[in-house]
Image 1: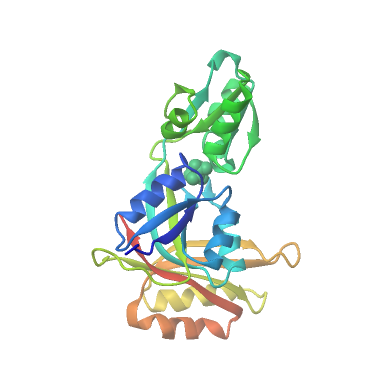
Image 2: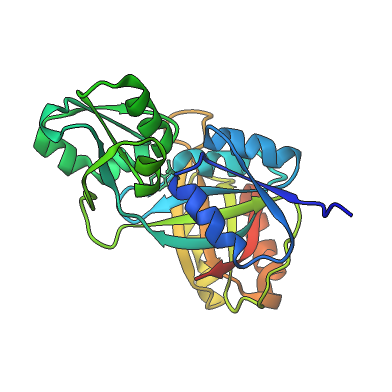
Length: 275
Ligand SMILES: O=C(O)C(=O)Cc1ccccc1
């Protein structure tokens, strides 16, 4: 009898997101088939329909992947169901370093290598993923183009690794999230959980954000990230994303205490942090 395979959507073969997906799968029970999408947006659209997905959400050099943050709010039914962090080492990929004039890669990779690129005086071109960049350079046969990507993608498209570890800062890590509309079964019981929420303040007055943060402080709940994003309503108005250590049985009461101070508050996920 044919076993039913859950679909797990991510960026194309050779991307760091693919590598993160394979790492997530080592934690999960069940059979999964990796399905490749061209963009983070496509991953969300597919997961909103069915299955699971893996996308980057934050990097230690460049900060949040704002598209992922926005799509977590836009696709309200899609939740964060897991997270893991991964070391990211970028490689210069192409034909001849001395002939490069333009570097192609995902915006996050370009930003994580900004000084390296600037030092060489190269211009940049952003595409939807690092392996799309390597593919574009390979198919162009243009020695003036170089890509930033993984060693896997260089091998996949038959290009040379011209330089390794070109990221601007050591210990370059990216946090990836596992997203989906239903729960998953993990092989071992994770011992650390986090909660992510997004909300809009009801009133724009002194201390408004302080009173939100006070609710966490008084309950001794540790925040791990806070970030404002444009509300997209008008310039200078914001929504707020907060990640915090799961307070267990106090979560419901904590969220209740925030409700009357917000115009909306959504839980984006309550999920295990995997190593
Ligand atoms: O394009 C990729 O390879 C991705 O997975 C997105 C990304 C780019 C740079 C750092 C981490 C993830």
